[in-house]
Image (cartoon, rainbow, N blue to C red; front, side):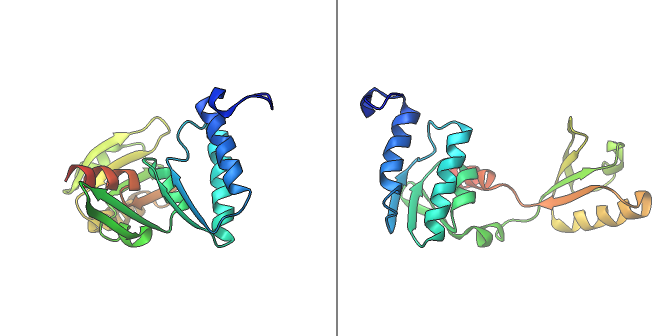
Length: 177
């Protein structure tokens, strides 16, 4: 990129960076962005994310549309998802998660995957390459039972994480419903 280049001659990512810099340097109170991370490499996406968060910290209101749920989760306090013009998700992210159960369990420190097959309410048990065992639970109580049994049988394990579906998975579920 040379300073004499015209924006229309730049790559999509570089053109987008220049346009965003031109807008963000004035620290506007309202910013509307449409897919701002599209076409950016991971380094530039992080720089843009940091710039957006800095403006947010300074009090700017940021409205953006994105299909990247990772970016939505990093930047947004509230989200709105529309499907065919109808609202299917609306609210603060922490409240949206509360509509779902902690249905995923990730464990590390147990090599015997068969240990988990005895539990009703456990499905999709997978041994990951990093040594983690991941599974899906029918309800949160199953996780409590597994935790209790692991402590009895193994004592300490380095990782026990029972989590909600990701925002991306929630998005997919709502898009299909």
